[in-house]
Every structure is written in structure tokens, then in C-alpha cells.
Image (tube, rainbow, N blue to C red; front, side):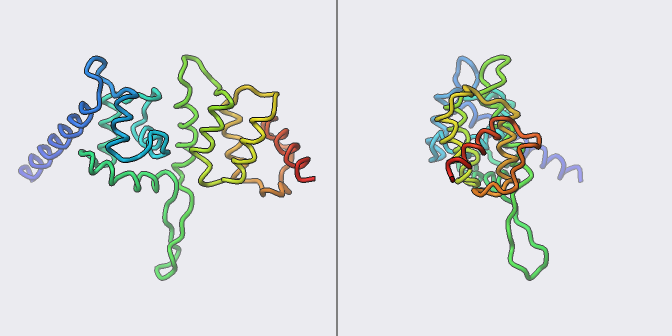
Length: 224
């Protein structure tokens, strides 16, 4: 048992060395962080665009605090969790990361086909995506243009019609210049709970953010 423990400890130490070595491949030598240029190089090696949602998922996995930057501790945490100590392994881990965030397989009975449902991680990821875009100290809201891009990135593949109409509304309305966390989370709840596009179960007497009341009013006027 002692020999196995020593061997396991050595393997973990070697894995950490490889993870650190990979980090310094992309890190800025002056700051000791992976900066935007390093992330672009990482994306190139992973053969994904820097706007790919999986890069945001990777930041979520690392619990990265500052947009466009990874520090060593975040990098270690994320890559150890993904069991990826080389760029090849990290590339292979991306599809599994996608599934971890978005979908999980379920099967009620042994011989029944496997179905999928939304992962419980998605709400955490959706919340993180908003927080990750708060780039200034004490910032609590995000401008409309950035929100439209973020909605397309993190929610468009699940709720395309809702996102398309909401983005259209956000771009033409004049009452809101920014979106806060309550409104951001409210729209996710809207997507999950409200029949679309008929909106038959939307009750504006309930505690919805006012911007969603206005959106629904705009949608109903558009339909009529």
C-alpha cells in the first residue's frame, strides 16, 4: 500500500508539472498570467474560435475571475478536474465539458433508450457567464450590445426563438441601456417556464422583471 501511495504521489506530481508547463507555454513571462494573446494562441492550438462557448465553459471550469486572463491556480484547478495535462488531452476534453455544462444522459429503465436533460450545472454556468463579463470594479450591469452577444453565445443553442426575439426587442427598445443580474436570470426563467411563442401562461401580475413585461407586450403587439 505504501509503494502504491508513493507511486500515485509521483504520478500526481508529474501531472502537475505537465499542467504547469502547459500554462507557461501561453503565459506572459512578465505578468505570469495567460493574457488575451495567450488565450488566442490556446484557441488556435485547440482549433476553436476564441468566441466559441466552450472557451467560456473552460473559464467556468477554472472558476476564472477576470475576463480574458487565467492565473496558474485557476489553470491547475480546471485542468486537474478535466484530467488534461497536454493540449491533446484538453482538446479531447472539450466535448465532455460541453456535456457537463449543457446535457446529462438519463435512462429510467435498462432497456429504454437514453434521453438527455439539461444539466444542473447550466444554471451555474449561465450565472457565471454574466459575472465573468463584469470587467470593472463594482460593475453590476452589462451594456445591451454585449448582452445580445452573450445571450446568443450561452443560450442561443437551447432557446433560439426566444433569444432571437428578445435580442431584436433589446436592439430597438429605448428604455434600457444596460441589463442587470436580476433581468439576466429572469430571462432564463422565462425561457424555461413560458410557452413560446404564444406566451399563454405569462402572467404580468407575477414577479417578473419589468423589462420582460415590456418584451411580452411588444411580442403580443407584434403577433396581432
